[in-house]
Image (cartoon, rainbow, N blue to C red; front, side, top):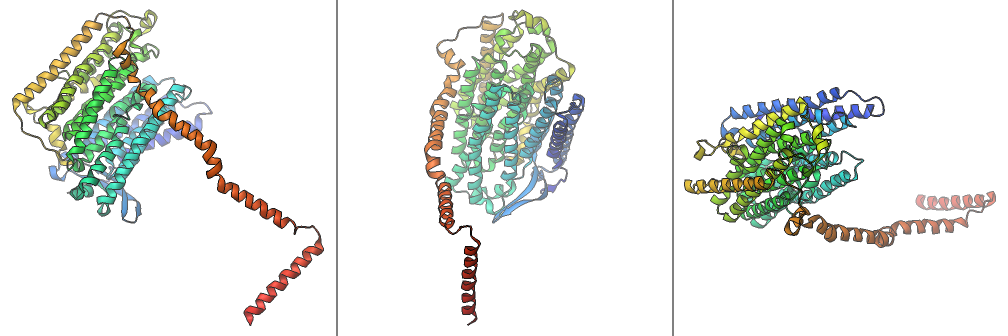
Amino acid sequence: MEQTANYLGLIPLLPLTGALVIGLLHMLTCTKKPLPEKLYSVLACIGPLLSFFMALVVLFQLKNMAPEDRFLSHIPFTWFAVGELHVDMGFLADPLSSLMLVFVTFIGSLIHIYSIGYMAGEENYGKYFAYLNLFLGAMLILVLGNGPVVMFVGWEGVGLCSYLLISFYTKDTDNVLAGNKAFIVNRIGDLGFVLGMSFLFWAIGSTGFDFLSLRENAHLLTPGIGFAICLLLFVGACGKSAQIPLYVWLPDAMAGPTPVSALIHAATMVTAGVYMVARFSFIYSHFPSAGTIIAWVGILTALLAAIFGMFQKDIKKILAYSTVSQLGYMFAGVGVAAYSAGIFHVFTHAFFKALLFLGAGSVIYALHHQQNIWKMGGLKAKMPITYATMLIGALALSGCPPFSGFFSKDEILFMALANGHPGIWFIGVLVAGMTAYYTFRMMFLVFHGEARDKQAYDQAHEPPAVMTVPLIILAAGAALVGVFNLPGIFGGSMSVSNWLAPSLVEHHPHVSIWLEIMAIAASIAAVVIGITIAYKKFGHGAEEPEFTGFAKLGYHKFYVDEIYNAAIIQPYKAIGSLISRFFEPNVTDLHVKFSTWLYTKSGKAFKVFQVGYVRIYAIYMVIGLSVMSFFLSQSIN
């Protein structure tokens, strides 16, 4: 039975209030003496931390309820009602959203704290934290929304904030273009989401357009319209979570400040698509063919991004492609109806990807914004804390046992195999080996061997505690959170999957334990092979290669951006130029020109009566009064 929790709305409201207060303070003082950075830092961290503690309250309150009753709601007001569409500004907390709330606010808070050190001395310090608070608040609205429309408010909010933060350094053209690219590509995906919502309301939403009502009526969807809704919603997910063909914005999103990259890649925007598909599991469970398409798109995205990641030299771009690849795993999980496995990988990924991005930020900070891994080396001795924590993150990302990524990623691969998708499983194992290779290629080139830039190496140092403490906390999470969903083969009880069960519609097949052992062994073997190859090639230092053949194609990302530019952007610009030169003046502006012509001619026609003599105007008055008298007399008679 659903219960009311009036404090739910405060969880997103707290960081949103912080964004408003910090934004106003920044605007009022930007032309005067700036306020102290410490003031902005304190104001920025209050909202996220309080939201985290309130998320824990939600989690424990749900935990004390019976599994079938784990739903908390709060409806502050009715937003709008149009015909049969009645939308409340409502919030819903259930096992799925509560898990998301906890790690989004926890990791978001750590990123805010880390930013205090990383952004120290930067211009527009206050504006940065206003945007960061706004980003977190928008994500919390997305997670807590009790229906598709409220979810879409947060959906658009994180899209806006990603644009603002990716292009934060507005004086850098590349950053601004990267922000524009993220914004425009996501608009394509958002159109799919809007169309999917519209079809959903038309099909079954007239009796209630919140998630609980839709779940009760999902069985009424016809095969054709239900399948279309599933794919349209997935188009929206492809935009937010960077899947083929809309993945191209995410690697460029690392153009902004590094903590922003951590927030986008780990705790906010890119997880939104996976969360949305899981939230609609009550629909996707009725249309497994749509799920199969999602799974194949996901695993092929994972493969493509892994290929690109193997040849990149920018440390943040390597991690960006690893995010695209790991998101592919998550979609493979939800696509094969292993929704809890996909969400658990979202959970573990948030820890080790935030850790790796923030660790990369520490390296960039120490090397005065150098991001090319071929100009690094030997930093293990200079930055032992950063190295140790990033090593844990690298092992977790690679899926090396017993770190968290192993348990979540292998659960997805095993479920793909168990649910009859051996091709997806095989590609997933291959990608696991590739991930281990490019992750440790990065680690060896950055931290091992000899320093390639002696001057930068001599100046390198461990960052301040405000940056290293979040790294240590995230490293502990990356190492340990996998135990929350230990499978039976390791003596666990799948706690996270059981917790999520009331929110999801999924089936766990019973399979042979030997099949599970074989799947685990294959995955571990792939990881070991990947790390071994990376060690042999880069473990003792290496010179930057001259890429040729397939490696050159991989480094240039198969020229996908160039193909998009030639096939889509340039024709679109040509059509726009054609419209501006011919269509607008001859069609769009025609009625404006006609109105101008009509008034000009009318003015010239009446001009003959404007002679400028009083006696002539007196005659006009007499004629007018005569005509009025005539009509009045006729009406009286």
